[in-house]
Amino acid sequence: MTRSLLSLRRFVLAGSLAGLAAAAMAQTPPAPPPAADAPARHAREHARPDPAQRQAQREARLKQELKITAAQEPAWNVFTASMLPPAPKADRPDRDALRKMTTPQRIERMRAMHAERSAEMERRAEATLRLYAALTPEQQQVFDQRMAMGPRHGPHHRGAPQRHEG
Image (tube, rainbow, N blue to C red):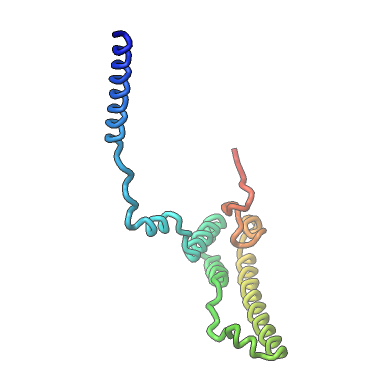
């Protein structure tokens, strides 16, 4: 009888373990179904900030760091206006139109586009020089540090080295 008693105990133990496992599985809630607005939520969570909003934040930070005075405000406004991207050109030819042009026509088109870009760069340079002339030497030093790598690279830019003061 010893053998049958051991077999019975094993059978009861196995049954008990199976029952406990089934109960544990029954208590685990099923995974929630994916939300219907999951793509929209993902887009909101991982959306890049609006470029115009980022530009406004950079300008506000620079203005605060420079401590722009009321007398410097007109030069500041011209400077920030010059940093806005130019409006898209409506007369830009498509690829087919460019292919149909002769080489001299394409060269003239490229020269005209180069002249437009040069004029835009000159306008920005003049606005920057006007603002710089209106700044105090201390403000010029801050401006030089912030603009050393361009208007989008400063101490708050990810690629710029961080200053740790302590």
